[in-house]
Every structure is written in C-alpha cells, then in structure tokens.
Amino acid sequence: MILTDVEKAILDGKEGTLKQKALEFIVRYAKVLDAEKLCKVTKAHLFAGAHGYLRTVQRDVDNTISLMHFCSEETLPIKNIACYSQTDSGPMDPDQWEILGFTQEESRENQEYLDRYLRAGIHLVGSCIPYMLGFIPTRGEHYVSTESHAIIFMNSLWGACGNADGIEAAFCSAVSGRTPLWGNHIMDNRKGNILFHIESKPQTISDWDLVGFTVGKKIPSFSIPVLNGSFELPDSERMRSSFASMATTGGIELCHIVGLTPEAITLSDAFGGTVPKDAITITEKDISEAQDFLCSGNLGKIQFVSLGCPHYSIEQIKKVADFLSNKKVHEEVELQIWTAAPIKSIADKCGYTSIIFKAGGKLVCGSCPILTNKWPRNASGIAFDSVKQANYMKPRTGSTNLYYGSMEKCLEAAINGEWD
Amino acid sequence: MTIIFIKGRGAISGIAEGEALVAKESFQGDSAINFETGEIVQKGHILEGKNLAGSILVLAGGRGSTGWSCRLHAAAINGVGPAAMIFPKMDSRTAGAAAVLNIPVVTDLDKDPFMEINTGDLLRIDGDKGIVEIVQKN
Picture 1 (spheres, each protein chain N blue to C red):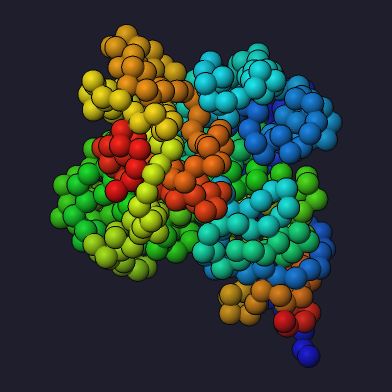
Picture 2 (picture 1 turned 30 degrees about the vertical axis):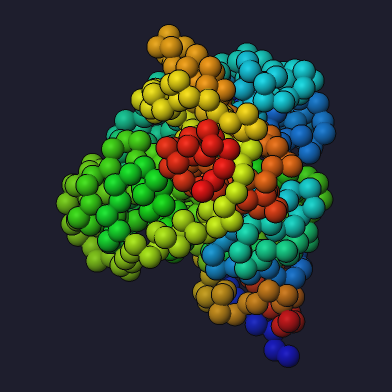
C-alpha cells in the first residue's frame, strides 16, 4: 500500500494513540479490500449512543467505545475528531425518553455516551437523514456514514462518494480522517451493471418502498442497479423510502435512476457504454408478493403504530397533522411519529406537534422502534408505514401480527384500533 | 476422500478450522443474528436457526444495514462469533466486518465456493497463504 508521509507519521503514533489505532484499523480494512491507497474524508455521520449491541458488552462507557468503535482493548477516550461529524439515530429520544418507557438509568447511560461524543467534536444531530440536516457532501467528496439508505441517497443523487463500511470503520475514519480509496470513492467504479426494468408503475411512497425491497431482494451481490421504465420520476420522499428498503434487502450503495440521478441522465450514461450483466423485470406480481411478505393477512386489532422511517420531513409531519386534526387515536393504540429534533422544532412552531399530541399521538425524535426496541410485547397487532421497519421487526415479533401499509392506512388503523 | 483446495487471496491472516455455514444470499446487517446466542434469526433465510459460533461463514457479500460489522462484533465479544470467513469477492460491508473481527479471511477465489462447499462441510482456512481446504464433506 502507498501511504503518505502524514499517514506514516500517524501510524508511528506522532498524533496520539487513538489516531494511531484508528488508522491502523483503516489500513487493515484497506488491505482486506486490496486498496492501493487511502483518501481524505471530509464528513462523518456516526451511529452513536447506548445502542443495544453495546449493552451486551457490559463494560464502562470509555472502555466500550474503545473496544466497539476502535477495536482497542486499551481504553482510549474518544477525542479530536478529524473532520466535520454528526450523530446518526440513537437508541432513544434523548429528551422524551420517559414517554417511550425508558428508565432514568437508561437515559443517563445514553447521555454519558452523548457527552463523550460532544466533547470529541461530534454534533448531536441524532438522525438517519443527515442529508436534510446540514450534511451535504457534493460530487466527488469522500464521506463516511453509518446509515445505509443515506449512503445510497448521497451517492446516487449528489454524486458523493461513500461506502457502507460499518460502524467501526466510520468511527476510525472520523478520527483518522482517512478511508480506503476503493469502491464508490473511485468515479470509474460507479457505472451500473444490472438493469431493472420497473414494469409495476410505482406512484405512491409505498409503491416505491416496495420497489426498493424487491430490487434489493433480486439483485446479485456486488452490483449497482439502474432503474428504468415508463414510471413518473420519484421525488426525494419516494426515493428515500425506496433506498431505505433497498438497503435492508440488498448490499446496494448506489442506485442510478435513468433520467433523474446525475450519473444516469441517459441509459447509456448509467452503464458507461457497457452492456449490463443482467436485466431483471419488476412486475406488479413482485410488488404484491412483497406486500404479502411484509403485511400479515390476519386482520384484527392493533395496539402500536409507528411512522417516520426514514425520519419524517416537515412536509410529511404536516400531512399527519392534517390527517389527525380533530380526530382521536384509539385509546388502546400507541402512535409514534418519528423525526429529527431540528425538524420537530419546526413542527412545534407550526403547531403540528400539538395537533398530533391532542389527537393522542407522539412526535418523537432521534430514533425508531428498530433501535428503541420498545413496543408492547402483549400487542396482538403492530403497524408500520416503512418496509425497513417491518422487515427488521419481523424476526422480533413472534406471534404478534405485523402490518405494513401507507401513512394514511396506518393512521386510519391507529384511529380505528384495528387493521382491516 | 481427496481434500479439495480453493485458492484465493488471504485478506486476514491466521489459520482456523470449523464447519461451513454457506449462503449465496447473505444475511442482512440488522435483525439477522442474535448476538448474545449466535443464532441466525432472519425470517426465511437459508441459515435461519443455525448458529454462528465457531463456524466458517461462506457468504456472497453483505446485505442490509451498515450494522453488518458491529452485530458480528458483538457476537464475537460474547464468544459466539464465527472462526473464519470466506467471500468470493469483498464488498465494503464484509471487508469492514473482516477488519473488525480480525479472524482468518480468504477472498478473490479461483473457484466458485457455492459450487464446492455445502453447509456442514469441515473446512480449514489459511489466511496467510490464501487457501481453503474442504477437509470433510458433510
């Protein structure tokens, strides 16, 4: 591997032990990839907080961070982040933890993590949608992110360069300021190689959500999809839902949409003049099979509804407020609407938060049920308007009926107390 | 029986032996493994119900969340992680996990591992020389 003098000095420990360990990890990662050199990272979006997988480690906070973020047995307090950084979603709403059923002790532990990150220079944004919250890597810019759909969004729509490296690699990049020059970081590697002909005519956010799930299911490993067809071009809300579900079932990091994303203005651009390795058609039947997989056919009562994955935009929150205005959520139903704290503050000012609250719903921030893992275990039915939530909750819910449907369908069910 | 060799590139050094868990469609990064017990819990996955502990994972690549590495990491810390991993090619999810687990890993193989290896086969991995041996077929 070719390393610069600065990188060699970091590996010699001239900039401290933490940075040395972080770069040692990045070099090991680069060798696994067979990368020839590293590139400078300008932005890092980091999965931070007292997340469930950390709790199993049962060590103190500094020791856990050292081991689980930097792969160091030696305790090395996190400090001196090398590039602009902000936090991804956490395990709870750091302000409204009590209404979600967390204990004071759990909140205190999470806060301990957040304090460490803040002192190290990481901004406590706490959201899976960094691209709507000041994290805007432009074409050719090298960033790291721990949110799978945000990587597809920023790579595909902006031409930014990020790989789905994982939590440890992202933290080590944030501290060392480097990532392997490999994969999506090299513009020549970003041409599509699998053509998806979308025959199903997706229109709604749900339609695009199900298209994403299906594309991810059908795509072979090591592939970059190109979506083509005579559909109406999706807006950013549709794309973020589609990318979120695509990233749960596939290993996708970049998705070209012909006529929309900048590296795919034409079909020929998308493939860089090469012939696709395969062509796959997504039909109405595929979409209804996905719907059947994700949504139980046993109709019945529900006790929990969660919306807002990816975190809702202010536009989506307004739609919820309009829907719930002068209505009441069923008394047996817990309704959670998830967003990012900066977006909730806009909703507060616009009066949407209080409309949702008066209807019996909660506008909560910085997490989601996958991460909080708080849902009524005695529920007979729970519902989501997100394929990502439904798909990831599926292995956890046992005999509880799991439902998937549009925002409107979920809100109706929350009001009626049943999925019909 | 004749020992079958697959040659490749050693991505992480070391030698390990164990039973293969093989999946051409990899499991997803979230809600696929119970990192306390090592059990694979992804609904409908070909390895659902199998246990990672001490296994040699043979997977096409990563899928799902970028938590692919950290959940395997938690499993390894809990003593129920895999002993080695084999990938036909690397992608960023699996490479990140390989660097984290720091267990023998062989990749860039000269044969299709999904044609040669079945779940339950006994494998020996040499991550220094980049060699996979199928010691005993299941």
